[in-house]
Image (cartoon, rainbow, N blue to C red; front, side):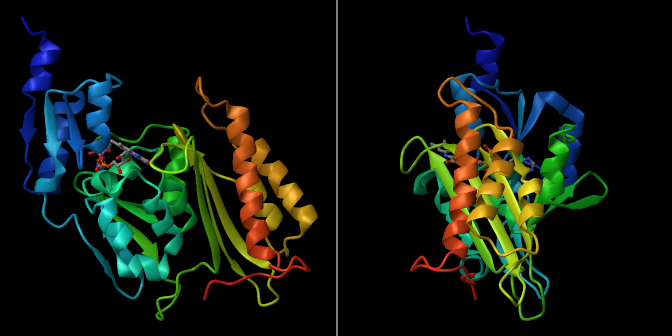
Length: 309
Ligand SMILES: Cc1cc2nc3c(=O)[nH]c(=O)nc-3n(C[C@H](O)[C@H](O)[C@H](O)COP(=O)(O)OP(=O)(O)OC[C@H]3O[C@@H](n4cnc5c(N)ncnc54)[C@H](O)[C@@H]3O)c2cc1C
């Protein structure tokens, strides 16, 4: 005879909310007995591998209208949380204004998965590979919290995750990527995204690093955001490295200093295959190498920024 868990796995009850309020109410009502499902790509692997057990109710977010698509107004690009990573990867607005983010989408899984996997699911997993890039791009997340909405920066959200768990009923609705002015200029002038896995492609991350910033007229760094994550690590801002870079023109000595800050500040999760020491060093190497490529002239003489225009 099948166990209770086997019965649930075979016959979970699928709820199809008509709107956000209904989805949120279902989650509040059934609590740990229910879970939001977007593309289901992560949840399916967790259920199949036994990392998580399938709850009695699954709340199908795809039934809610208005949660997909990418559009821009004069302030920002808005991405619906149920937009697939495949759509994000090919979107002309994102390719034009946020190429670094597109690099991150390209690095996640393969086409077949990206055609079902959503950006919202990647974010809500807390360890998705696009999160460091979203932090570096100054993204903001909009959540349905019942009767009201909460909008906060990706950076604030992950920093809060390190100290407290978010309310499980909060439902991610949209992701905003800001424009700096009415000419729709993204607030970054240089940027880089790097993911290191245990093989070249189609691989889970060991370390992901994203960085972006703007420059002063003399080419010195005006401000920069650096985020590191990968594996099961919730991304972290590299505040000490950012502070060291602010107002300065990177040179060899500064890169060595920044390398030291990242190696010291990054606290990754370890696992039997990859140690935390390796992840720390890799993150530091990736950040220093990205700065080197960005600020050291190609012919190797002198220093100056190559700007993204
Ligand atoms: C073969 C394979 C390879 C993969 N490779 C990668 C990889 O390289 N990098 C990577 O980052 N991931 C990878 N993944 C994991 C996964 O595909 C992605 O993280 C994906 O973006 C998750 O999106 P989803 O819509 O499928 O999420 P789901 O599986 O539906 O949900 C994931 C989590 O998010 C919650 N959730 C979903 N949407 C919302 C929402 N709008 N509001 C609140 N909570 C929500 C769910 O309750 C669940 O806890 C891979 C998965 C597979 C199967």
